[in-house]
Image (tube, rainbow, N blue to C red):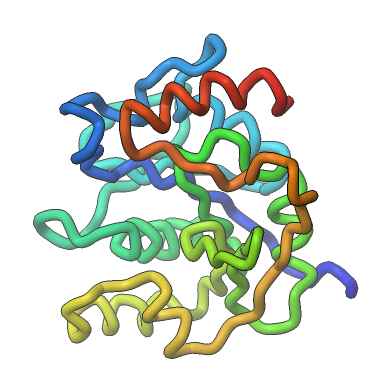
Length: 201
C-alpha cells in the first residue's frame, strides 16, 4: 500500500513515572553507551520531518522542543500524545508518530509501515500484541483526544484508539528473534536489554 501524503511529526514519550525502576528515571538510563531517551531520538529523527520530546521534568535536550502535558497531575501517556498533537498542529504537520523512550529497539522503519496503513489511526503490533503508544495519529483528532481525556476516567491510549477505529501495522518477527518492542519497566528488564543490545543494531 502507498504511503499516505502529509507532513509527519514525531514525539518521544518520556513522561512516565518509572515507578518500577527503584526511583531511577528510565529516560536517563544508559544502554550501550547512550541514554534510552537518546536512543529513541536517534531512531525516530530520520523517520519524521519534525521531532519533539514529551516530558514534564526535562528542561532541555539537544535544542529539541520539550512538550509538557497540559493536564495537571499524571494523566498517563495519552496526555502526552494530546500535548504532542497540539504541538504538531502548530508545526504544520498532518500526522504525529509517537514512540516510548523505554523501548530501545523499536523498528527503524516504524513510521514507514504505520503510514502505509488504511485508517487514520494506526497502531503497531508484534507477536500478536498491540503496542498502542507506537502509533500514528491524525493531527485533526486533537480536540477529540482532549475531550476523551476530560470525560473518560481510564485515559487509555487503546481506549481512545478503539473509540476512533484503527488499523494495525504488523511487524513480522521470526519466532526465535527478540521482540523489537521489548520495553524496560524494571531493573531486571534493563539487564535483559543489555543482553539484547548485542543483537540489535
